[in-house]
Image 1: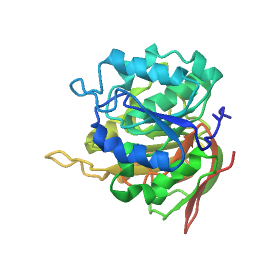
Image 2 (image 1 turned 120 degrees about the horizontal axis):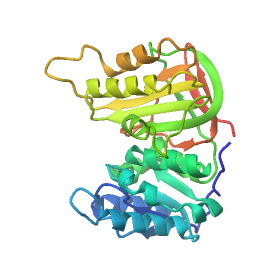
Image 3 (image 1 turned 90 degrees about the horizontal axis):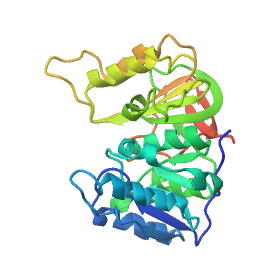
Image 4 (image 1 turned 90 degrees about the vertical axis):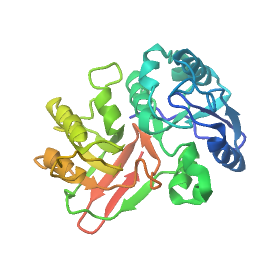
Length: 303
């Protein structure tokens, strides 16, 4: 079982930074305001609003700020304002010694998937796959999905449901949950950040990819044995999918189904997690119970 960082209390400090892609400061303004309304102090990093071409600063600047917030014992959680791309350029230079002695919640998704897998692999500490700064905009912070982040930070156990899907494979499994963005799960294969999901609940999601490209990622993961011994599979949102001029011939859920249909573990499709407003907070490394039934799907934190 993963090491659980201390849950937050009112008055605790949350650090906000951009470890990968650039984000204008104004797009994080509502998030900062709402976190303060929730009762937290907020320390905004220099990388929020800073730009170096595509990135929120140079590799050295982003690395230094992430390292500083990991080491600062006054900061009790770190919220990545956005993902994009760039964590893999700095991750192997991180020093996790102080972080391991003083764990804190790391929050985010998308490119932050790599940070989640790396931390769990290197330290055994749980992290939080959850909405980032843009999810708070336009009043969305009042929605259940953003509120699930608030609840997770205070120690409440997630208990989620979703409709059934015709590709679902019924069953029940209790295991630690791992996963995130499919491209990043594929990206971390055979690296120091690689986590074998055997015996675990794996969840996957993605955005803006070509269907053939996702099929290639899935085939690579299958060839690497990553689907063989799962406790269960949770297929989240696959949004803004693209197709080639000559169509691939299948939609993304059919592609995924074809890859895993030979296995007997429970599988649920279109769970509300991913690059969409419906993005529930999931504690990476923590044990959940997945129930895929005829009329309902539930995912409940049990540890």
